Length: 238
Ligand SMILES: C[S@@+](CC[C@H](N)C(=O)[O-])C[C@H]1O[C@@H](n2cnc3c(N)ncnc32)[C@H](O)[C@@H]1O
Image (cartoon, rainbow, N blue to C red; front, top):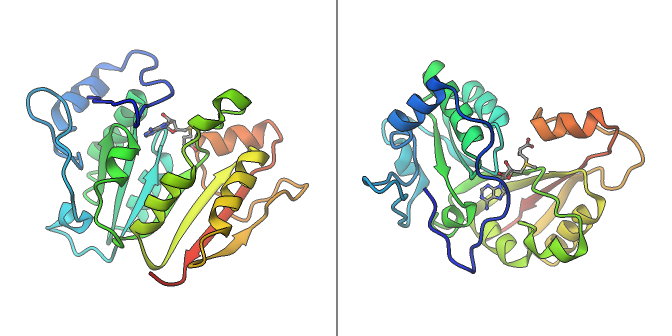
């Protein structure tokens, strides 16, 4: 499933416990049907530039929303179920997460959700500009040690790409329970004159819930009493 080069290196786990028979069967049988970049027989996604609206040709889609690193896919699944006229796209490298979301897509016959099982960079480099209404980056891998911080997803370069994918009035929604990562994100976004910080509880000393995304890692943060920083930025103009 993965083709990697040095520049776009993937960090983090790709496999966990063995998939159930049903998960394996669904993954083998349906992943191409719900993939943003279907593969040939070699199982390597065929990357190409895409207009995300074309992924949902048979539906009347109002807008498109993207989640980076959807983990077990709970947030995307809930949203796709609640908003059938919105096209949801998500990417994830962790096989168990992809299999778990795919099972729900099949079980609940979800038609407005597409997946990229692979590196999120391959996705964001290939989406047409100004096509997304919302982007979610929920609890990105924290890489807290100084020597690993350069592995963090939200850096200047990736933020540049993400921001260019948003249409006017589109929002980028970020959550992290790592304070210095939140500060890093804010520092990067403050330099963008065409974005406003429209909501944040940054560094408040309370367990705040300005947003509740109900993801596995949000629950982990709440259970261990860690405060989550939520940041929402809106694009004012192209
Ligand atoms: C800390 S988890 C958070 C998962 C989920 N958003 C949540 O809140 O529960 C970060 C996720 O990002 C995924 N991830 C890390 N690097 C990635 C990459 N290059 N492309 C796609 N997903 C990635 C990981 O596999 C992991 O599932």
